[in-house]
Image 1 (cartoon, each protein chain N blue to C red):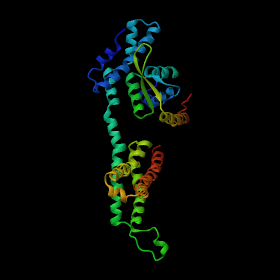
Image 2 (cartoon, each protein chain N blue to C red):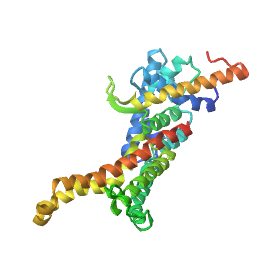
Image 3 (cartoon, one colour):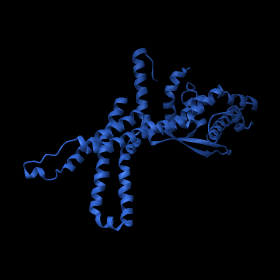
Image 4 (spheres, one colour):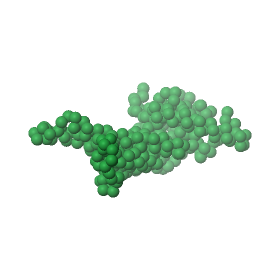
Amino acid sequence: MISPGIKRGTAELAVLSVLEAGALHGYEIARRIEYETKGSLRFTLAALYPMLYRLEKQRWIRGTWETSPNGRRRRCYRLTPTGKQKLSPLREQWTELFVALHRLAGVSDA
Amino acid sequence: MPDWCELVRQRLAGIRLDPDDAAQVIDELASHLEESYQNFRREGVAEQAAVGRALEEVDNWQQLRSAMELARKKEIDVNKRVTQFWLPAVVTLFLANTLLPVIQAFGPRWTPSPTPAGLIGWSPGAMVYVAWLVSLLFVGALGAYVSRRAGGSMRVEFMLLVFPVLPYLTFFLIGLPLHMILDERIARNVTVPALLIGLAAWVILPGSALLSGGLPMHYFASRRQS
């Protein structure tokens, strides 16, 4: 299991990456990340939503209210053009980190 | 199935957010938990167990409430607005307006050139004006730097850089035409070319000087931060 400190750092990248494919609401974001990382990254509500609000304040993502098929109001998040711009350097930074760790300690990025 | 909204409202009772904000947070969290619950039910989990497993997504309601309060606090936005926009904008406005009389009083002095060609276009006023325009490059750079250090975006920097010329723009676009309508003497004395020259001298050129000094600073500061 990945430690909370590392998770916090990867959280922004994870959220932006899953939103790159299309708009999702909070629950879907959490499930998609969990699924794509085979359960290694799991967010509690206290970790996920404050981060979504922070990314929204930074205008990297935009949330809009929609009504689900069962009539429940839910907020759907989309990547903004600014968020798309930020995603690429974030990816590069994390790749650099993995490469550096790989060199240092044989940590694989795969 | 429980009333998820009511459940979340009870657990987050006393959350320090304004009512609209609190209602949105409750709606969003309730929607999340309800979907989680429905997902467990679809997987064949019994109702009570599904409720329990959905609620496991919240480790600690107290912690969730604090995290939500912090994330939604509007003061953070207000503080950001002050440090990223208002503070550098006021500094830029103040410097842009005080530097002109300062240069006039202590700046370069015009000395008549011995050659007739040197006299063309270099009146004492023009000398002071050009010196002021040059100083605006540095004022723009300073404003952009202060904003950039506080995390200001390109858009915020652009707005604060044009901020000092907005009073002049308002004067030329609204104040002066209004006076021309109301006062016949002003209407007779102000010509369209003079109006355009004034607009260029007090809005376009100073605005361009501020932007020319400030926008390169954005890239410079961004590169240093990265």
